[in-house]
Length: 98
Image (cartoon, rainbow, N blue to C red):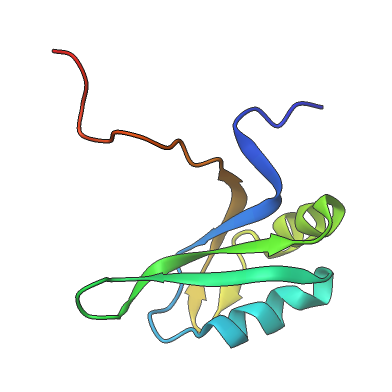
């Protein structure tokens, strides 16, 4: 099965409460398998959470289990969205030819 432009062991988690910590997120998702990285994205200026993050599992099977179990579940009073993370395309970002 092709994952297209997605990373099979890496999940995007959106809709996070701004007070959710990386340790709490890792603890919640750690029940599905070993996590190699857990990162909540923060605003560069303020350091405040932007309400989403990424979790990378050692196993794609663990990521799949976490995705199906946690999508649209409640965490810290908010309903979260969980999906596979898209691979980051490097370069540019400021348009192209017009």
